[in-house]
Structures are given as C-alpha cells and as structure tokens.
Length: 248
Image (cartoon, rainbow, N blue to C red; front, side):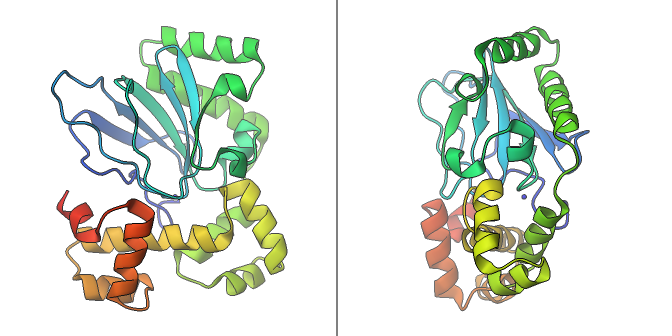
C-alpha cells in the first residue's frame, strides 16, 4: 500500500468531509484523521483491503488495524474522533514487534500486544497532545527509529506484485523460493504473496475505474482474465460491485 506501488489514500467507501489524510514524516506512510460522528450523520463507509496496517488512536485507546482480506465495517461505538498512521505494506510488523498474520482481519488494542505500563504512557501522551494525530505520528517515528531500516526485499516484493508480476516471477526476482516467500509474506503482510497480489490488483482496478476507464479496459489493464473475473474478485474482496464503489 511507496507512492508508485501502493495507494496513499485509504480505500474507503463513502469518504465524507470528516475524513482527511496527509503524507507522514515517516517514509511512505500516511497520517489520517476522522472527526467524531455527528448525530444523524451518515455512517462511515467500509475500509477496503489494501495491504496496509494502521496504528490507530481514539480517546483512551490505541489500536493496531491488521491487514484486511475483506472490507472492514466499523461496529457500534466507533464515534471518534480518530487518528491513524497507515504503514507501507510489510513495514508495520517490524515497527510494532508483532507478525502481521496474527492480526489479520482484526483491530487489536495495543494493551494486548505491549506491556501495560508502556501502553498506558503512550496513550496518555497522545490523549494529552493538542494534535493527537501528530503525537501518534511521533510515536510511530520513535518506534520506526528503534526498529531500524525497512527490509528492502519486502519493498521489492510489493513493487513486483503491484506491477502484476506472478508470484513465481516475484520470488525469483528477490532470490527466494516460493515457500520462503510465502513464509516471509505471512509475517510481513499477513497473508501469502498470492493474496497480496490479488489485493494490489484490486487497488489497480479501483484506480483505473475511478479515473473513468471502462470496466472492460480496467479488467484488461489491471491484469484480470476478463470483466467477469474482475467482477467476481471485487465482489469477494469488498462485498459489493466495482460500479457501486466507483459511484460512491
């Protein structure tokens, strides 16, 4: 999810004026905010799979949003305000100290991952900040500095799959066997390279369709066998049709 190989914008249906995002001081990351839901306001839309993980704050809590394999719908009690740091695919597990596959399709409180005292200090610091989003970004920057440089092999995997290269060709390009790549992908991305490639292909299709490209041409350019293949994949990953997503 680098600017040329993964979307900066979170794939959200029905993005409203309450949602905003900006590039982070953390390389290839995004800082986003969502204001508190007003009474009677339209419910926030679903978050679509994009290969990313997020560090998320709301008053009194910090959570980790794991990598999604399907559209995520926030439940009751998600009124906000919210702030988050979205990490480039494959970088969050090293920063947060937890394998991605253990958080797949989950939102987990940081208190379940870190020692209690450490988490409480982090939450209190962000809660007390005049700008919680910037304070959360500062936390992410400190964690990233402690973790050291991101693994360039993982970036190469994302770049290859985002360009539509097959898994075997991707494994060869980074000097790994298929099984090795699968193991590395589970820890870094939360699922195997085939699923990551499928999710990145979905993102290519969304970008093309939202730019006004016809569905038939979108299917061909994004790497689908045909338009029905595109329709099935979008429905399985998002729960709705590409036409509906573009319309929103």
